[in-house]
Length: 85
Image (cartoon, rainbow, N blue to C red):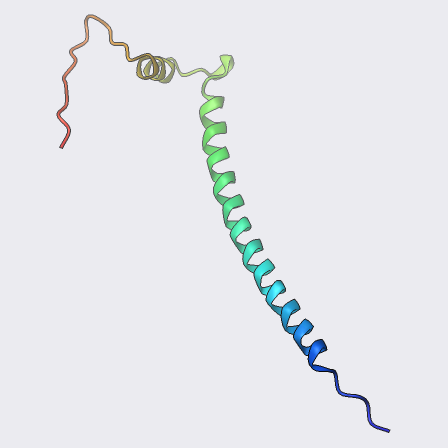
């Protein structure tokens, strides 16, 4: 007695499952790349935050960031306007 061949519907479902697995594999790859980029960004931010902690604060960095964020310069400093290209 011979085994019955799978029907066309079964082959169609197998093909759909293979496409679904391929799509999921692409998603996993894309999300893994995104996670790696986010981890790198987090490491940079953690490094910057560590420099602002009281026990290891870098006064020059704090002064530079405060001036940049507040758009402030000391009256004794020389400020040169830059033209945009």
